[in-house]
Image (tube, rainbow, N blue to C red; front, side, top):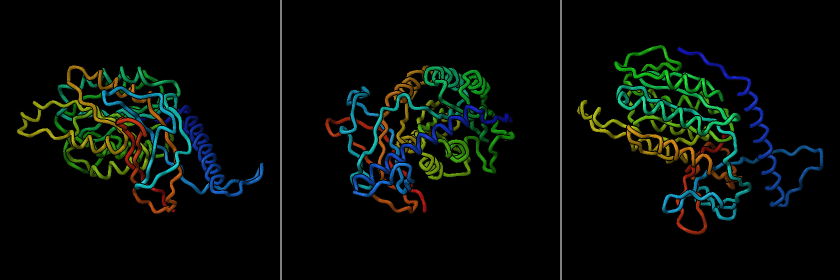
Length: 335
């Protein structure tokens, strides 16, 4: 088992993003107070922040699939549980630091497509990752293992991806996150542990890239638990669906993983991108383009209850019939 530790750059990044988030919270609270006629504290005084700011990252496309990158705040409407919300801050997020996880399926079903996945994943990182961004690499089969902790070093990330190998017999090895479950494809465990153990305390744009056919066998947690963990950590999930139908035919099984990938990706504001085993570069390029063309919409919910309930989010563009990819909800904090 590889042991990887967070770098000093990681800690500096966390501090920088915490400061940014605090500034956003203070700004949103000030605006809210002003609009409600509340008295603001004098200069040098203390402003008590009692509001929760919700971030919504959105990608907008026309009917023909072309991404729209020139919209303003006034072009959007946003509702929470069918109640209109005021968009208090807005920006285009192409340059916002990115924290990303690459999750590689190394179960037997990926035997004929893994090498293509690996080469295209490395090309994707070279295209997307910048010095201020961070990424980790994890593989999953009968166990879930962290191959490379957060880093901006492309050499280390490439090395971790290169070393991913198919666990042909479903043989258990000492992974980073061993479980007691059976089966050889612990996809849901990988998503859950990425959210709870790695990304939960990060801020800003957080993305998981799943390289898998979406079939799960033996995870300790359910898909609902994995999705909830991702939503509570504010993660966007992109799924690159590379599947080998002949593998399932040889096993006398039908392939049905795509619907599970849609559940994970659609609810979190990402997408499922189908890819052939011969050329997955187009799928990765679509993800790269979307990460450069995101909008950030921030609002302070009118429902101020700290009850931990799930709140539905609806984002629309006022004019036209644009298609929007954005998270469909979030879990309110608890008191």
